[in-house]
Image (tube, rainbow, N blue to C red; front, top):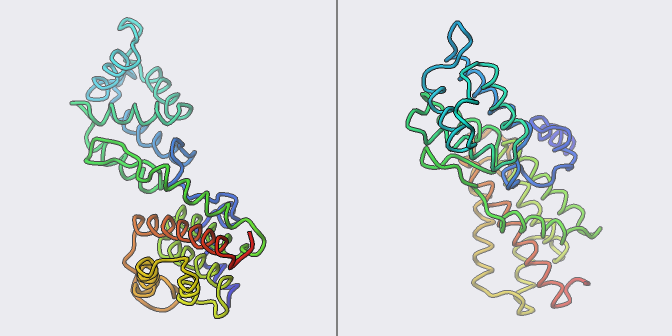
Length: 289
């Protein structure tokens, strides 16, 4: 049964994601642009520009206005060096999208989106590609590109993976890596399920019964955790049991009402919780250092 579940979970993931080679979800890769996103962005721009080429292969319309201003006001090019020829313009912009760093790429996109002559529906197209490529940056308020997570979120998950590097927590680490892979694949319910499984796996190492509530009770008994925090952690855990389809995705239930924001919150919260549990357990001698 477990094998069939694994096969189903791998169905929508790349091989690299399924094998845990990419431990952090793409939504957490700040200051990076994936090859997928570059390809998606260039496809939008390429076909958009081609819609405004005349029979002399020269650019006209809104794209001409936007790119002319971009060359002069952002790249500080001399006006007599600028041409309306299709191939020259495509080459200039393709270089930015294919080879530029995240500052260059997102800077160009935001310039176009904020321009008074921004091509029709261009902002909507870019917003869709950022979402579908599950980028760490999204279009906010229709004109501003911003990260959807912080460096703290990124470091929290990295710390949890490091804390789980010991052999005895290999299972918990595998679940956390899977949570990241599922998040990258856009399988948000599965990502939440794997995040909470990682917590459960740690709980099994801290209590004889293997339940999270018993593990928390054990820490509370050693004065290692405040009662209020215990209640809060149990409440978060209960959330994953209430939403249909998260803990039992193979049952014939309606699609669980979770999205990317939920999955990002859970992988971050569970990662922080794991590091917290392990640190407390080591301080009070429940597990060895």
